[in-house]
Image 1 (cartoon, rainbow, N blue to C red):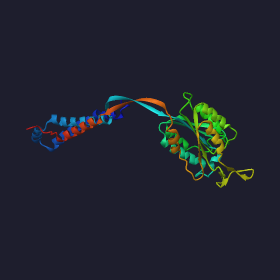
Image 2: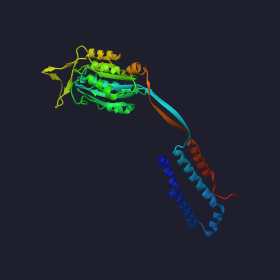
Image 3: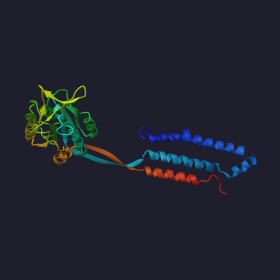
Image 4: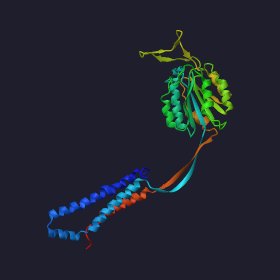
Length: 335
């Protein structure tokens, strides 16, 4: 009981502190009068003062303190049961964390811009469950489906090109992992994949993986990041802190957006392909509102919550009335 209402511990102040304090004050007052007044004068003073009224004033203060303590426990009654149903879709983000996503044709770079866009998306979600898979040479489930958006936002801050243990880009592996390990098999609808990548793939058969996902009722929305014409170099920082660009056999590596494979992927799932070129903004919030929030939703959870009528105001008012009454309560006997 007291664990649920910690303010009730203050009630122990009454017998352990306030009552002894009042008793001590009465004794001290009596001693002071004996010192300052003669026996005859003291008898006249005591004749005009009522001990019962003094105790009454003390009782009013104690009752006021008790009422305020009870108010601090937020008393409530009249329980009303409410059924709350939450609807939404399951959305899994496949985020490319290969080194090609460090290209700076999209500022600050492809990966960081994607993370910023995902954080904007979290602010727009309307009860949907969200999961995150990062992929490069292999795919890793970083976050299963959840409605804890604060946790997802914290997780995003730690995602780098080191988030996967192997180099390369395996889009197909990421799609298969989402299909087999993240989405459930309860329904063939209400499932979306947001694929954010530059489209580079190392023979992971992404189109075949997308076709399999389509059989499970999964729709893929692919976001192509980068320049599909000239491409961009991959910046690297050496041990001495000097900045240069990735080379292969003495030549600088230029990475272009491969939009063709992404078009094939979305075509297999009746999804949609969106291109983000240099200088363009990636607004996942708008994409979500246009393509996901307006789609059919399912009931994700049903909760029964109990609502009460708050009644702490009654005890605050009672405490204030008792305090005011104590001020105007006279100790002298009525004449």
